[in-house]
Length: 442
Ligand SMILES: [Zn+2]
Image 1 (cartoon, helix red, strand yellow):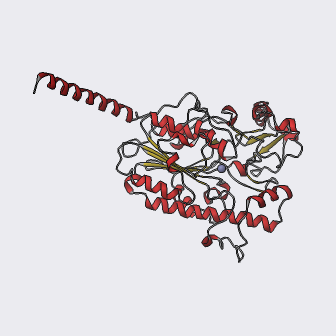
Image 2: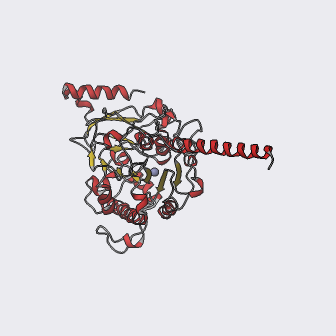
Image 3: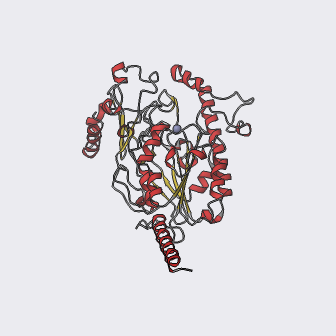
């Protein structure tokens, strides 16, 4: 062996060592002071997003029907955020908003055709650059520049109900992986049409025979003409039957997860928005800013977490900072929300004013008959169609600029508009309400 050859081999070994060291640095997330760990190591995170799942229809949130026995039992032993809200009640902007921890108007995301610009940083990208392996299992056909931000995302798109099976498969292959991972599962099973599988169609006192699917066109008609009480009950019942189906799929998913993964993983369950059943004349979602379309479950369970209920209002804009924090990574400056880990750990956070907003362009014929064409085409941030919630108070500024004020403690279903009675409020309440009025100004 010549001296030259020895030198070459030495150089290759040194170079390989440097690359190995660099890779280790790249893939080893630093630990933060968040007190969350799984057996002394950084935890993995699995996020389940059940599209269109209103928290008002889950037992953990007080619903009377047994729609969610597994979710109630499993996540009831974790941290339950009782007052969690979507920031916009429609799928694409809601995902774009919580992926970037920005509001839809800040990222110009209001229409079906909008695409999330590459210039907006999403949390999967933050995780990737911090050495976390990321995967998204989502329903085929939905992307808009949002779901392509994972290491594996596009290739894992599936049709319902196979999203859970695909996630299971991915998890099984990661059970001995040393690299921390993040997995998101997105399914649209409870989204309309409400057409539960055969074995769920007799639940909750359903009459036989099965009257058939609640279709998109039936929902459009309900928005235009209202519904007879019996027909409204059918809509709700079939939606609830689908929730029970998702609950069973969730149960099966957890049963298949190896113990090795369970003890190193934090599970988060939420939704992108809720669903309306005529509470304020409207059906489906994306057409109002009332609680039925905004209240979402936010449930967190992990091996080191203490069971507790958090009643402080929070919103999905806080989800990305929370996930990034679980991995011990710093919150990017572009994120508008804040990590919820202090609340998860039983500590306090300053009270948040929860902001929700809605692009109206997509549903021009639903609800607001008084809208002028000029208002319809005005950009969202100028139109001021927003709602703010702080403590017990919620203020909605409609697209026609009318205000609605509700006290959610005494009137959680938002039935009595107190805006004309705000002169009767205590000084403390007036201060909060005045700040909300100032906050919704276009
Ligand atoms: Zn959705």
